[in-house]
Structures are given as C-alpha cells and as structure tokens.
Amino acid sequence: MAREIKSVAVLGGGTMGTGIAGLCAQRDCRVLMLDVSMEAAEKAMERIVSGRPPVLDDAEKADNITLGSLDGDLKKIADYDWICEAVIEDLGVKRELMARIEPFRSDGSVISTNTSGIPLRDITNGMPKHLRRNIAVTHFFNPVKVMRLMELVPGTDTDGDVIEALSAFCGRTLGKGVVHAKDTVNFIGNRIGCFWMLMGLHRAKEARDEGLSTEMIDALMSGSVGLPPTGLYGLIDLIGLDVMDFVGKNLAQNLPAGDMGADFIALPAAEQAMLERGQIGRKSNGGFYRINKLDDSSKVKEAFNLETGDWSNAEEVALDDAHSNLDVMFADDAMGRFCWHVMGGTLSYAADLIPEISDDVVNIDCAMRWGFNWKQGPFEMLDALDPARFIKRLEADGLNVPKMLGVMRNAGVETFYRNDGREFLGRDGNYYPIPAE
Ligand SMILES: NC(=O)c1ccc[n+]([C@@H]2O[C@H](COP(=O)([O-])OP(=O)(O)OC[C@H]3O[C@@H](n4cnc5c(N)ncnc54)[C@H](O)[C@@H]3O)[C@@H](O)[C@H]2O)c1
Image (cartoon, rainbow, N blue to C red; front, side, top):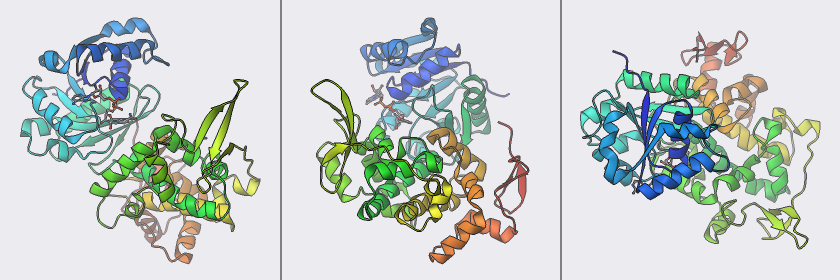
C-alpha cells in the first residue's frame, strides 16, 4: 500500500530545521521539533514565530508544533510518518543520530537527511537494512519557505514507495519543485553552482589582471547572463568564504577522479588570505563588499580591491548592449573572455555530468532555476546560444565536447528542447515528453 505522510518529526532546530518545521506547520501538518535541549528547541520556536522574517505566515499555526529535546523525547518520533534529520553537517553526528532513531520509529515511517553534500551511502554505511530501505536525502534550499527546489536522492537500497511518499508530500503539500538527483557529491544544484562559484573565483583573478573591477565582474555574472543580481562575489559574501572553503574540502574528498572541478577546489591566494583574517562576507564585517557607516550615520557600500587591499565606494556598472546578454560569451575582449571561461565552462561542466548526477537535462535545468534562481538552466542557455555555435567555439579552443553536446551532435539535432519546450532530448538521442510536475 502506498505510504502517506501527514506528520513530521524534525530533528534539529537550526536554519533548516526551523524552515522545514515551520513550513510543514503552516501547511497544517502535525510537527514534532527536537533540538539538543528543550531550551534550544524553544529558541528555535521563537525564530519560527517571530524571526525576521518569521517562518510562519500565521502565528497560530505554531499550535501544530510540539517541542522536545533529542535526549528526552526521541521516543515520541514513533507517532510521526516522516523523520526529517536536519542537524549540523557532520558525518559522525548524523550517523550517531540515525542509529539512535532506528529503534524508536514506527514501521512504515520514512526517514530523510537534509545533508547539503555528504553522500547518503556514507551516512547509512553499515546501518541495518531496515533503515537503508526507508531513508533518502531531502535537500531543501535556504530559506526553505522561499526556495522552490527540493532535491530528492535515494540510496541504493531505498524502497520506491519511500521516494513516492516524500515526492508527493514535498511536491503537493509543501509546494516544492522536486528534482530527482543521485547519490553523488553535492547532488545537482550545489555540484554545478559551487563549480560556477569556485571556478569563477579563479577565473576572476585573470579578469582582474585584465583590468576588470569587482563590480564589473559581478555585473557580468548577474542579470546579463540570466543570473541573480548578487553576481559572483556578492553571492559568496552571502554564503561566506568559510562555507566555500568547507565546500571545497568536501569536494576534494568526494569528486570522482578526473572531474573538471578538481582544479578549483582550493580558494585562490587572495581569497585564502581573506579567509585567514576573517574577512568572510556578510556574517563578518564584510568580504568583497561591506557597508560602511559614515559620521553623519548615512551608509555607503564599498568594494574591496583584492590586489591593493583598499576599499572604495562601490560603483554602479552599466553594461552596453553587446555585453548585456548571453552572447557576451563570444565578445572578443576581456569581458567576453571572462564570461566564456566562467559561463561557458559551467555549461560544459553541466553537459558532461549526465548521467553521473542526473539522467536527463530537465532535472538539471529545474535544479538551477529553482535552487539558484537562474533564469534559465544550463541546457536552456545552450539552446538560447545555439549548441552548434557553442561546440564550434569549444573545438576552436581545443576543448573536449561534453557528453550531452556529443549526444546532440551524433543525433543530428539542434536543440535540447523542442515543441515549445514540451519535449527534451534524452541521452539516447531521442526526444521525450517533459514529465508532469
Ligand atoms: N543553511 C543552509 O543554507 C543549508 C542548505 C541546505 C542544507 N543544509 C544542511 O542542513 C543541515 C542543517 O543545517 P543548518 O544550516 O540548519 O545548521 P544550523 O547550524 O543552523 O543548525 C544545526 C542544528 O543542529 C543541532 N546540533 C548541533 N550539534 C548537534 C549534535 N551534536 N547533535 C544533534 N544536534 C546537533 C543544533 O542545535 C541545530 O539545531 C546540515 O546538514 C546542512 O548542511 C543547510
């Protein structure tokens, strides 16, 4: 019989735990939220109700949430259909907790971990088969209430009805865009997004050597190529250089041999020096940008010069028509070279990751639109650019043609989507209907 989720036990009351618990409560589910102590759980509840912004739209929905501590109340999970682990990103902590919940949860319940990048097989390695059949990764994006993407990842032993139940609940009840990913490092969104960021930092050094400023680099890596206004440096300020360093170290351990990302996992020297002096972004007193409060208490945004170490007022950059759309990648100047390297490199990377991280282009495009707010996913961008023209440039640069572009070329077709976006190119070279959400 198909499993149905109506109640959720969320383990961990941090950023993600409060986001998931709050969203489930808002959608009228019964929620248990456990944290390291009752005090921590109560603080988490305060953030759900009165954080800035609050997680709940209707404060009275807080009545759907019961609080408790992981030590005192774990046995209560027996009453819940979905046990959703959202504790710190630490393999040892996650494994220990999984071992503790298994004896308490009821038959028929499903378990998930909200890891951002630890392979599920590492979390479940050596655990009882009963647990391995009932667990998946549910990778929500922050803030949970706002971000549409949820990557759903089965392990090798996960039962099909576990995936069906989580997909139905997160899609229909929580309103998420469910993307089916595989148990590979960083799944889909972060695999491609972190490649874009880390490679972008390295390529930006060359662009700065060619005279481009911090602000120009961000102008090129935002609206003009269909990416959010934060750009490259602005997004990394938001995430934190400490997190990027952590991501790089996880990639170093888990990327498959020969992966293009391996060249960019260590921070470039200037960013490493920023990390070491604590200049890590918005959560410190600035990173690539800072807000400076003047004597008259007005505020001014300043940009950091990585070469000189000086701060100066951030400049507004207006790009001309030739540099304000995806075609900028083909411009024969410093801006064009930077965009070709970073966006062209990222599109090539994505096109080489099928079937490793996803069986089709649709899941990859949805992940980048819903999780990173890209206007178009990588394959939609390639269609907009004209894949044949893209291949020609790769060949002119002496670069390999990535797998999915090779599939397209061998099939003798010209686009990844056809029929007004209703069909996509499969990896066998045939077109298939886009699955209904
Ligand atoms: N924050 C994000 O942007 C984001 C996005 C996607 C996924 N994730 C993943 O979600 C998970 C939670 O991240 P977060 O941002 O909510 O972290 P957080 O630091 O905000 O919260 C961590 C939670 O873990 C609890 N905790 C700490 N030590 C513990 C221990 N030893 N045993 C049990 N609980 C412990 C804390 O009390 C807290 O409730 C991580 O695996 C993270 O990688 C985070």
